[in-house]
Amino acid sequence: MKINSWVDLHTHSTASDGTLTPRQLIDSASEAGLSGLALTDHDTGNGLVEAQKRAESIGLRFVPGIEISAEYPHPGTLHILGYFIDPLSPALGEMSRILLAGRNARNPRIVKRLNELGCPVTMEQVSEIAHRGVPEGRPVVVGRPHIAQALVEANCVATSKQAFDLYLGVTGSAYFDKERLTPRETLDCIHQSGGVAVLAHPVQLRTGNHAELQNVVGNLKDMGLDGIEAWHSDHRPPESELFLEIARRYSLVPTGGSDFHGANKPDINLGLGRNGVRVPMAVLDRLEEFWKTKAYLPKAIGKSKTESSHAE
Ligand code: AMP
Ligand code: ZN
Ligand code: FE
Ligand code: FE
Image 1 (cartoon, rainbow, N blue to C red):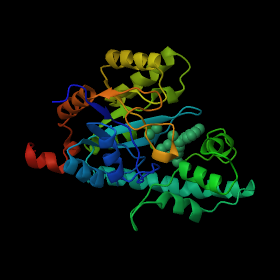
Image 2: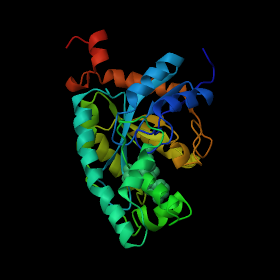
Image 3: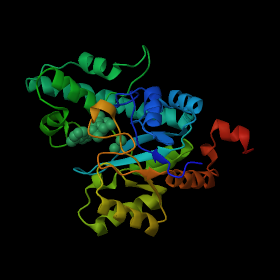
């Protein structure tokens, strides 16, 4: 067994707004020296089967995951990661359908507003960007990073960051919110998809102080939250320490990942984030152990688990 082995538990592929296909992502993880990877695309499990197959064939430990943005007051954002979800579960399919309908209503509104502001981008261009490198007919979740790239290619902005600062971020002039699930609905859907639910990058909650942060985490824990992402590209070391302390206090499993998006976030390296922090395999071991203890959830028993060890 390798003494030092590392994992990345927060990554995006072309199934949402990353630029590597699920297969390329697994190969890149292996090339980067990682021993385990979770794919956590926004709102969809469509990349999971491809990633899982490739991971099996090259001997990389793989965790099927998802990332969902739940209702939360601005300017903060509340993202929940699901781990060990069953890609074929009906609850996951139903949740994705709802979330995609929200995006399909929002994206054209953003594009229309951009046109009114003098930026000549179209939904066709955005869609073409989102589908780059993706095999014909494969569904893709279209998000703001694709619109940002369309703005760069139309010479409306110099960089994707500028697109978010001026237009697409919550304070931007073409920002529209999308229909979201409540935190409770999100946690329930993840559990019903067979997964455990982890609060992503808690810094993005933008809570004003420790008391407020603990209040949010405590409420989520009461609704069924299982874990908290301690290591992330947006976390400085003291913040990671704080979230580890909160994990201990609320009996939450700590996790970590880079939030790799390929060329859509070029400053984030797979397995290293933008701050060089690495997540040891023991973190994944603990997460998986915890997930196994949750297998009592009636709808949580995925096909493979039912076949192998659970008779109910
Ligand atoms: P969407 O799912 O369409 O709401 O877009 C979410 C994606 O946009 C995530 O990958 C975020 O990291 C990215 N994003 C959100 N706000 C910003 C920002 N201010 N700058 C860069 N990327 C952002
Ligand atoms: Zn993203
Ligand atoms: Fe996120
Ligand atoms: Fe993410």
